[in-house]
Amino acid sequence: MASKSLGPFPKTVRWREIVMRSGGDLELAESLLSRLTLLYESFVRDEVAIACVSFLVALPICTREDKALKALRDTFGIVVAGPSAEQLATALNVVVPRVHTVKIATLRTLEQIFEDDQGGSLFAGDPWEKWRTFDGSGFCDLARRFFANLNYVCFLEVL
Figure 1: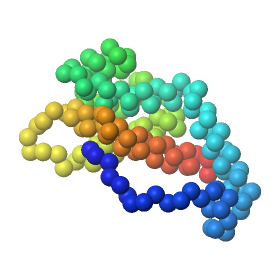
Figure 2: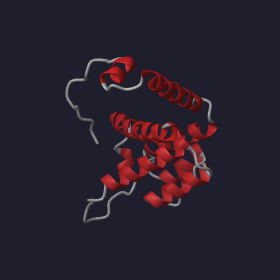
Figure 3: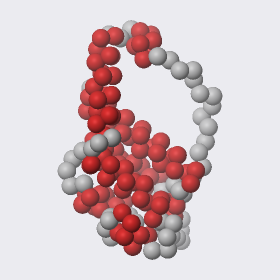
Figure 4: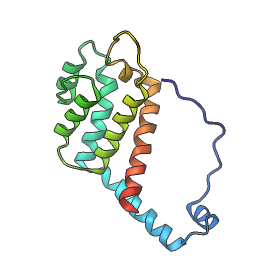
């Protein structure tokens, strides 16, 4: 899965300018930004957030190996029954049994990756191949998907 350019990047616009252009309440917008900043900063030290990110990162790393299930267990302590969306979601629920913002973003990311792969092939291939595409330069796409989902969930939580 190669990355693709969406065109030239827009120039940086300060938060205050975005709010003023939209006719919004600057005080309310600053409050929103402060709450989001605190939430994002809390993830750096949050064991659940780190476990969720590690789970997602482990998939492309461990699928380099011929025995991905063994590599996931031995390297990251993740016990997975198989490569399906349901099996990965179950494994994540074992690693992180409680509801958490980063867990929801991780589950959304897993779900989207499997939705994108619905077309599939007539012939059964390597079930771990989708995760190998996120190794190397493809990791940027995995990270982009995850952080888009994390932003979505964080905004829902704060708004």
